[in-house]
Length: 422
Figure 1: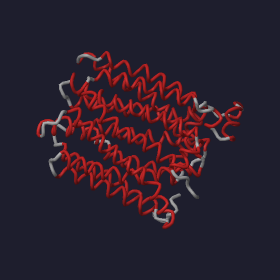
Figure 2: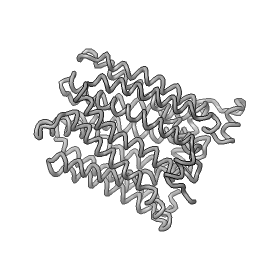
Figure 3: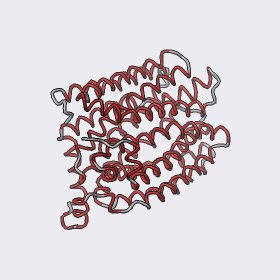
Figure 4: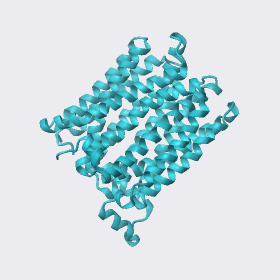
């Protein structure tokens, strides 16, 4: 199938441009919130690793638990309305961080983080289900890459700017920017017509409520599809296994940037953490932007099978190598390279995955997959914070890279003899 280029999709698809613009703005605010929230927790808890672990858990686990419910919800109701409502709800929640001033107020930061990410699960479920409808099959690869590229560009830019803002003007400004970003995102979603967010078959099914299955029946249908469809289960497994290693990255960046490099190389903690996330985000962004060209090359040579497996293995090894030399810039470089490789790989396998899913069930499968991944990611983040009492962050980095690479091994085992990918 001939895929649209990035330029062709953006120039020719007004509705996709609106969704992309909204994500770009809200992701910028999200990363301001992450760096400022993490810095605020570090400040009021006296740099407790367990306090940071709870913050990571509050970001990831609620999103993961809510995702299956959110996926079923957005397959039953207006995806546009879900995105509008959750953006406005998140704008209000983001301002509650302004009330955290001392250790007794930490519960506010944790609760606000939980509520932000529960709402985010519904927004992401609707957005992921809408994207293929807005792009069409010929624009899906470019659309997937652009949506994730915007997220990762903002990981780079937003985390770096969030670190600078926290250092220069304090945490409060970052929380206000986050709230404003959600309002702007809601406006861009409001500009997208409802009919553009569904295909005709799904729209007819939604309109006829007599043919709609009960909520829990549809949720069960999504779970059954995920575990009985070979390719869906393969994607679920490699994402979960990657998260077993990748989940430690929150603690790695916090301990290396916010403590180790701050103490040994006199970095400002917030700035160092922000720049490490910037290196990861920039690498993922570069990878996503290269994905379109790489995918065309793979299509010609039918090389997706080998590429996905070896990319996962190599990126994990490179991440481990970054821990071997105690230099901030050396580690940042290897973070960038490893994330660039996995960025290309993710765009390739996610496009294959989305193309394999029927529209009527896409929201459920996408969010179940994402929810399972983030459940593991969140639990590993919290467990990794406890490991900081018995090992160095450098040792944890090596272990993290090796475990992440195992996702490539599982890919080869699961897809052996299925080189068409499905």
